[in-house]
Length: 511
Image (cartoon, rainbow, N blue to C red):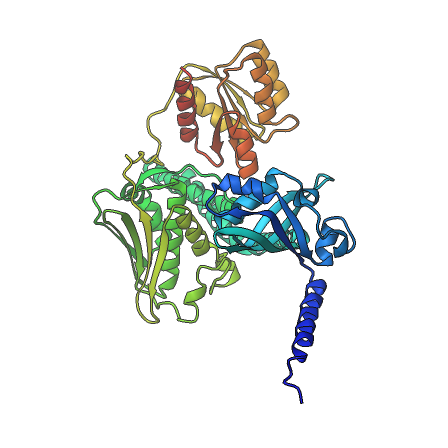
């Protein structure tokens, strides 16, 4: 009776056969390159990169052979690496990542140009065999994920389209409420004495500013909308919009503010700060069943600024708390909100390098605390929402706006501020006016019938390369970036006073 040693080679052969079968039936390309001359690991990185090209393929599966342009592994074994992969910068980049990772790559993504001009995306794994300070060979696998990534992009796009549909109910409700408030205030103002009318008009203006945040919310959904971040004193921002926050809180809720920080400066876009504040105040208001108090407190230390909004409502149930920052998650009826307030606020705060902390238990107070990095910069002045002194001048302004009411309002404000104004409705009339008498500054809507505002600016600059340009638009990121290349971008909606300020800044900057 034998000791079984004669069975060991057969068992080993069977194991090798099983492994080979596994390699051949996987959809991944699996390969092993062995270096003609072992590479010392103490060589400089770029020297190692160059020496890695001097390698032969010593093992692979049929899938890898297909990727190299052959049918069977036997046709490629022994071939030189450069014959199969070439000597390209893409390949050098892959080598560098492999070496920098300690002769190891896990889930590396590479975009590889193809002969037909397309680009394929590969998910790579690789590990090197290093013995006695010498890099001997590299085993690796590659998976073509081009189609997978394309399908993922299509799914994300479909989800965005679905998101727009889901937004319709909540956003329409919010926007219609604001329009109702504006229309009502202006209608009553027509029948009121001067003092009461002025107050109602101020209310309508404040409501219009709040309405503009809804369009910003739509534009920033699912994309990174460029914003104008700058150093801001949070206390000054809260003080400036305090009347609007009181209005948001409603009659049955008392809003108490407490600023304990001497200089709570952060770096953010002011519109986004207002958006976060508004979202948190509305969220706190809706948590209060009857009458109650919302406390807004600002504190700071050496490194951070903390803005806390605390309500004495019913608290958040434990099963709901983990989901409150999910887009579209809401416990309200569909016609009472979009479910985007907290998710939008979290995105804004994260983009500013901060976080939002939540403290809540059912039946007790709830506190949302925005924690932001403290800035050492000098804060920018907050632009007042009320009318200040006209920022006027005597320059000639070419105003191009196809909406008659908007054009009339802007023209009136410009003339009242002392400017010499030529107001037209399209690019053709603008070109004719410019030929008749050159202008000092072009103020144009981006969206115009026929030639748009950006194209108009380009044409006028053929004859006047230094012509200052302001482009007014309510569109999203791509259009804004195109307009920004030509001049100052003014976002709609904007007040006449804000437009006057931007015109004056632009003209002064060109002197």
